[in-house]
Image (cartoon, rainbow, N blue to C red; front, side, top):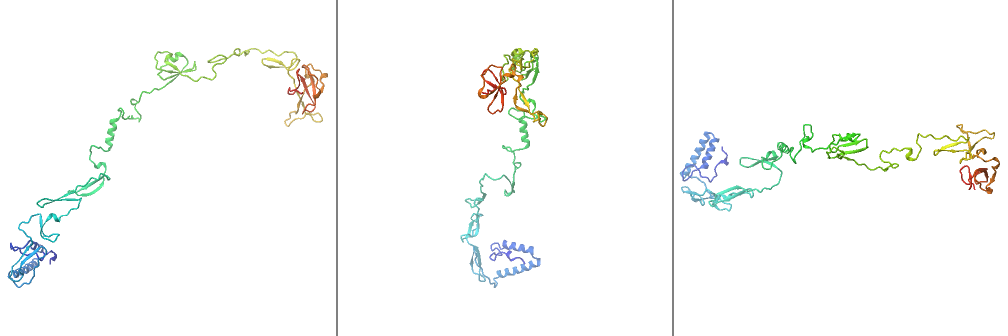
Length: 419
């Protein structure tokens, strides 16, 4: 059997009283039954229905009740043989297509505008109703937030958003604000190559071609030994010439006269010594320049008078004899009790520190005048040469030799006065 839920409502008439034909609701129901039931089942159902209809038409003793639900009203009696008229409250012959019949939200039965049953969500849809009650729906305008990550959005044919994904500049069509591409950058670089205030290109050797470099001044250095050689140089401005004959350096200026005016001498700090013996430059001195004997002059031999001489200050000086200014001293060797000389571990002789003056070494002084005087009773000082011995001197045991210089008696050892 069919699903009872698919049957028309109990208040739905089977036959339209005005046209005398089956109503659309029941006709659709019968059509659905035809697709679900066998022909035998349908024949039985039609037979049952026909019998029920015949009973109603013949006013058969059929017990039933009719109630007016919601918008349905009825007039007449439900007794057998009476006529029952079922109508809609507030029904009209030509209702507008902008209205619907039923019980409204306020409980009033009748015709109500369709627009009253349509509700829209604020900000999503708009609704407008004209004077004829026609309802127009539209999409509400959405304000541009102006922020957020760049996204690309997919829409269907009805304009509904079906999805979003992260977008890149590749997804954007070209416009006035051009985005980066390798080709666009390469074209811009090529446009700037070799242009004023542009870019300097590199050659195939990864170096800057010479046409993009300013004029360079390369300085060369020439070593020459004369002015003629210097003036013959194929020199450019800034080149340097080193003159070995003058010990000077010159730099080429912008001159083109072919003379030394084309060269500027390079200055050096002045040396502390400006001149030597009145000479400047490469100074060469001779013995005559400083008052000396020439190196080739023969030095005279010492006098051959039997005395000893020493060379000093370009002259011979007597070490012994009446004119000698020197006294030769002698250190006495150290001996043991038997008179044998003593030596150190290397075999060298040992000597006393107090010098002794042999009497024969004092020219013009006889042994008879070498008298020992105590320090407290020295004789009057007489001109040299004269020698005495002095005893009793402080810190020196024994006697010490002394000589006269015409003023004092002096020690032979250190030429200091003994008194």
